Length: 96
Image 1 (tube, one colour):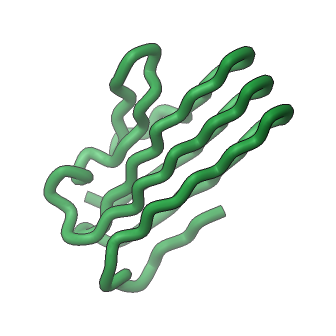
Image 2 (spheres, one colour; image 1 turned 45 degrees about the vertical axis):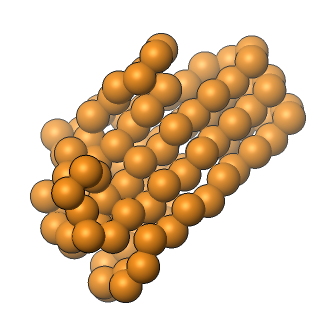
């Protein structure tokens, strides 16, 4: 779970990997200057992004889940999620 309610002051990049199993992420922010992007991949399994008015799903096979303000955000979270066998589940909301 990631809750971002104070100014970050920097960009953050991270990765989440598992060979067998699921990756589950809950992301929330209430800052108009903060954006988030998740890029996910799997070999056997699925990618499940929770639809929300402040987020968009793009990329091949819906592999990218990002806040609508990601491109213009002052501070950005950028995450890569990878599983060989399993699913990637992300539920995100970001204030615009």
